[in-house]
Image (cartoon, rainbow, N blue to C red):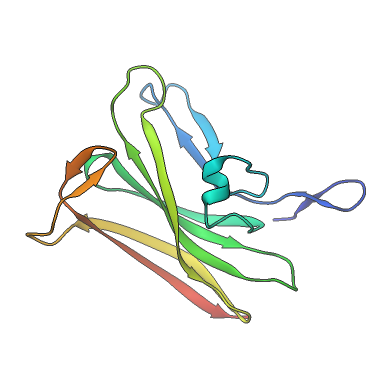
Length: 159
């Protein structure tokens, strides 16, 4: 995908991952970008380990128990002098606690791996399964529910 540029040749934007939500059974949709995109000046954006990367791609979303959602993808820099990238998992929860407004809350993002010079992380895949029998329960946004395992696979290519 080509990078957009302004008349002076400076970069104005690149690919990033969107989050699309419907609060009325799919009749209408709202979208936003996953926190951490280059122009993001929000608190979650600055706190995101994705902040500082030029682009994000390859989204995969999986639903877990009790309204949890896991969103994985890759981030990268196209700059040949700083070509690093990485693979991440972001977490969301549907609190199912409102009839008006957005019940889906962003919980944060974890960087799982960062590529190094000469390596590139790519093609993430994610799966969610019940946690092991007897595992301690999780508490997220005041909800307590059985633990769940999140599995992530991805490739690392040599550049």
